[in-house]
Length: 359
Image (cartoon, rainbow, N blue to C red; front, side, top):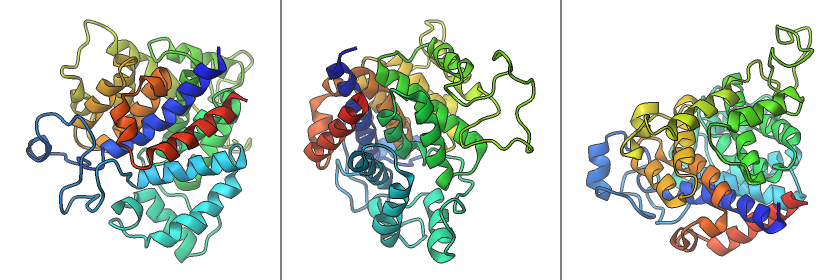
């Protein structure tokens, strides 16, 4: 594996996520597709400006929502610290983010604050609780949208990736299913940055890392493992999950996306097949389908994610990261790079992390 190819894939994953976020700023959260088409036409093909009264009103085409803002905060911490530093990350939230929000939804960078961050703000700022006691029960991809940067940085060490991703997720989202699905997504992203493909074999490759002890998912088929996961008398560490199903499921989804007898046409209708809401069990499957189907076509992947409506921004962030990791920066259409707000600065940041990840 050449260093150039690795670094291009790593930077492509980060830029792909930032692009996916910015593409969603205008048409975000239209659950009525007739309203979406009336507002933006039959096909959204580029960055758009939010309509008055919408969630990100006041932003311009190519700018980032709060999800992109927090992703960049995470990227900056990684770049400046040379890797994941939980204390530094938390300090940045305390110092640079929480003073900009007030705990209400329609406020703060990007014009909207997510559920998990509103809960963390309430417990951390208003009640003075320490980090480790401020996580909430939001069941969506809010953590995944930032920790994907950690996955890119740790792509060469899936064990560290799982520890760091699951630990950061648990800072704001406490649900074990959210943690498992977020860590599984990031483990797959790590393999793609290494040069693997997102296809029906992805689960077998990940399960091999479970069986050799690299990934902390329980598997009763692992040699020497108990049939029952450790109980409360044997405390689990962050990211030790009871079931590997979050890893196994993505392979079935990818295999179906590549099966000529199983078609979703047009592809943006993944939002209707897997669901338009924000929860992880709607968002990850749709992103997996699009990543497998359009593994070599970044434009088709992210635009079908956006044109499906609903929580299309998260769908595009996740899809953009996965496909960006496969095509690299060189495979992302130039207009998506140049049209992104502060594109040169962000590309330099992404390349800095990619160089550190290469080692």
